[in-house]
Amino acid sequence: MKVNLAGNEIKITKDSGEQFNCLISNIALVEYLLNNEVRIHFKFGPNNFIKCKTTNLYVNDILVTKSVFEATISVY
Image 1: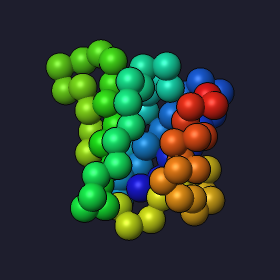
Image 2: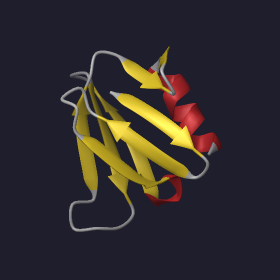
Image 3: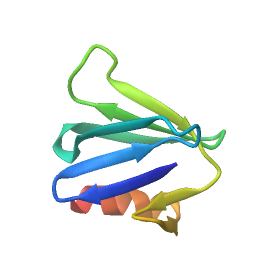
């Protein structure tokens, strides 16, 4: 999974190539599941989360750990 942060927006690209864009302020919760899945919950919408199975997690093209990803999202 790749995440690109620009200002107050986040662009999520799943390993499959599928992309999602949203405002970071619309993210309610990020969960890390035991089977290499990241679930990102949004505050609004009928489908209020996306689930990404990933073995590598990138933020702005830098390979990061899950804890670094979480800290990065919380800073924005």
